[in-house]
Image: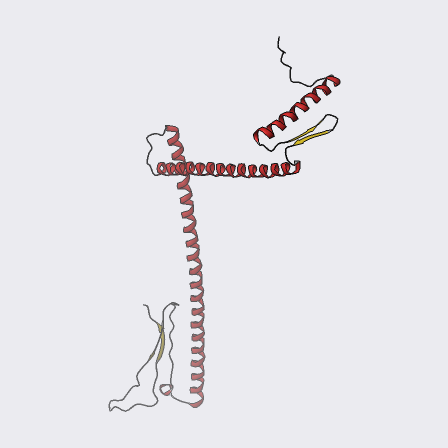
Length: 243
C-alpha cells in the first residue's frame, strides 16, 4: 500500500518541521549536485532555515554564479525593456494611423461626401459642426473688416490733420500778404506816389484748402506807340484751381 499525498502547508509541530527540513534540504542539495554533474550545469543553491542558519551549494564558485546571475538578469531586463518599447511604439503608430483615418473620413463628410452610411443623428451632428465652423469664419471675417476700417479711419484722421496744417499755412501767407499791402499803402502815402505807379500785389485765396496754389504775373501795359507808361503795374493773384 503506497503513501498518501502530503498536504503542502506549514507544519505546526516544531520537531516534525525540523526533521522535514533536514530531509528535504539534503535531498535538494543531492539533486542540485546530480544536476550539475549529469547536465554540466552551473548550479548555485542557497538556503536559510527558519532559525537563520545558512546552507549553500555551488558547482563552481558561489560568487561567480551570483555575478553571472546578475549579468543575465540585467540583460534579460534590457531585452524585456526593448521589447516593451517596440510594442509601445507599435501601438502608438497604430493609434496614429486610426486617428488619421478618422480625420480623413470626417473631412470627406464635411465636404459632403460619403454621407450614405450616416444616420439622422449623425447628419444633425455634422450640420451642427458646419454651423459652428461657419460662425467662426464669419467672426474672423468681421474682425478683419473692423481692423481695416479702423486703419482707414486712422489714415483719414492723419490726412485731415495734414490738411488743417496746410490750411494754417495758407492763412499765414494771407496775413503776410495783408501786411505787405498795408506797408505798400503807407509808403505810397508818405512819398505821394500815384496809385498807378505803385507796384501792387494782389493775392486772392479761395476757401478750398485742398486746391493747389497758382501765382500769375500780368504783363506790363504799353501805350499805343509801344512805350511803357510809368512804373510797371504787377498784378499778382494767388488762387486755387478747382481741379
